[in-house]
Image 1 (cartoon, rainbow, N blue to C red):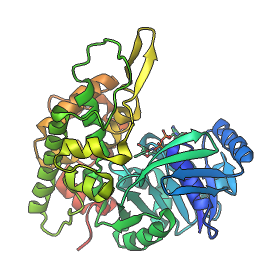
Image 2 (tube, rainbow, N blue to C red):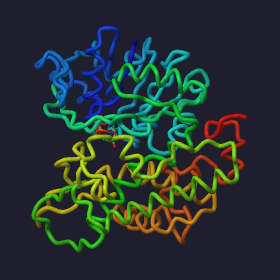
Image 3 (cartoon, rainbow, N blue to C red):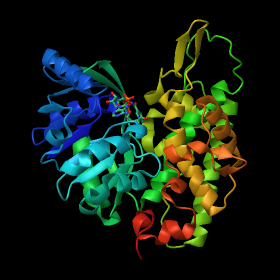
Length: 399
Ligand code: NAD
């Protein structure tokens, strides 16, 4: 298959080595920052291919092209994989759109919230002759070892959900990705499920809140463990956020009985499905986080200042997961009329840390909504708009 990987970080390193190691693929990399493309080319020349190390061994694959030129990168590709933080989705899609050929599959891993709305808008006319898809999460926990040369896969999920628009394409894309990614990819009914079910939007801001809501500026001795640092208080926050997502799910299903939101799972179910035997202790939500082998050793984001270490509130756990996921979820809750007090508490704390404004006086009306993935940003303010507008029909299967 002719594949274009967009991005140069941890996920792109993993995809590059894995997909280029499979003989039937023609794998290319698009990096919109030319200096990053140079670093990739230098790294690959030194190492002779991207090395992907995991508990199962090592794979090496050498992509055929690394380019910062969207026209060159997009030529003849059948599959585009956005392995990027969500804040880069829109600009990368806009760069590639003029050069993509009809019938191309374009997807993000992970999708984060409202990726369908973002892609439909950014791709313009190209969206009409493409299939858009998103994965509920990245199949791996992975970290670059040597830039452009090697990456370590710390854990691989047992299965990952995929939504597509048009929805009837989800099965074919899931089958192809199951073979390519060597992870079970399961088709789900609609993109709305992904917007509600993106667990990063709960886990990342929820744990940041749990770890640092009482932080008063004192230097940290060292970066605290992130997932293993989940204590009883944080587990309660995560549980309450997950319960609120379920309340949104059931309110929507009551109103639209034909709407399939079965992929919007409670957090503990999602952990079991994704991590399986990597969870050594499943007696409680806290124990599941603390004992997950895929999470071992991962630290909270911190930054060095003149006064010592302090939490990095601008790292992606807030800077990506809040505007591009939690705010989208909160937007659906607002439209559905479902109260979300715990999500609001975490969101208000997080937006203050980020210096941004989304939730004001209990409504998504802050000035930074325009740069978020809230459905309201795309002009969607009612359930009828979600389910009836042709443009957003991806939110529900046509009956
Ligand atoms: P990363 O931070 O390593 O990605 C950084 C790369 O993104 C950069 O090297 C650059 O190529 C690209 N990029 C950043 N800003 C850009 C911009 N403005 N324009 C164009 N390109 C830009 O991220 P990652 O770890 O590869 O993660 C990719 C996605 O997967 C993110 O959404 C992340 O939250 C998610 N995720 C990652 C992991 C993991 O273990 N790495 C696990 C779960 C989910």
